[in-house]
Length: 229
Image (cartoon, rainbow, N blue to C red; front, top):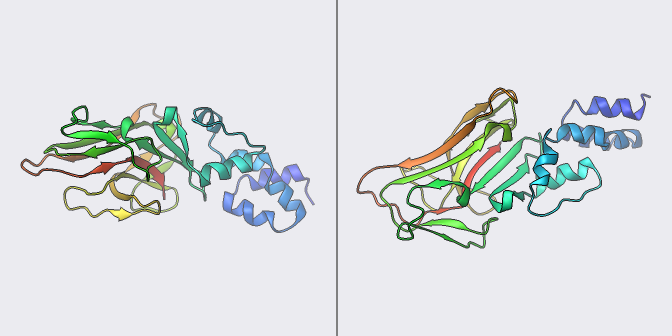
C-alpha cells in the first residue's frame, strides 16, 4: 500500500464528496482522506485571509473541520457587512452582500427607505422600502473574491452560481422562489469568472425598475447573493 502522504496527495485531486466516501473504506484511507493535505486543497487558496476578516474568531484544529464550519454555517465578514460560506459539494465561494453594502437610490431618505432590524436576517439591519417610483439597487463585488473558472448563472448546476436579491415583493412580474431560510429570492444576473488574476476588477449586479407611476412599496432587502448551485 502507498504511504499515507502519497494517498493524501492523490485524494486531494478529487472532490470533498469523494474524500468523504474514501474515508469510510478503511482506516488507512480514513487517515489519508482526513489529512490537512487533502482539505487544504479543497479550501479556497485565500481562506486564511477570508477567515481573518470574520467578525467572530474561528479556532479549529484542522482543515477538514474548517471546511465543514464554512460550508455549514455562514460567517460574517468586514464588520458584518457581508456573509461568506462555501458550497459544500465543491468548495466554491458564496457571498451575501448586506443591504448596507449595496447602493440603493434614495436610501438616505427615510420617506423612501429605512434600515430596520429583522429577526430572520443574519445581518443587524435590512432595508425596508416605504415608497418609491424608481427602484434601483446595485451590489458590487471584486472578481478576486469569487471562485475562478466558475460560471455564475441561475440556470446551470454544480459549479455555477446565481445572483439573487432577497425580497418580499418584486417588480416586473418576476416570481420569487422561497429559500430554505424563509426568505424569497429572484435571479437578476449572470457572469463567468475566469482565471484568478485575469481581472482585478469588479462585477456589479443590479435590480432596476424605472417605470413611471408604478409605486413600489413593502420591499424588504436582506442583500444580494452570489452563490454556486
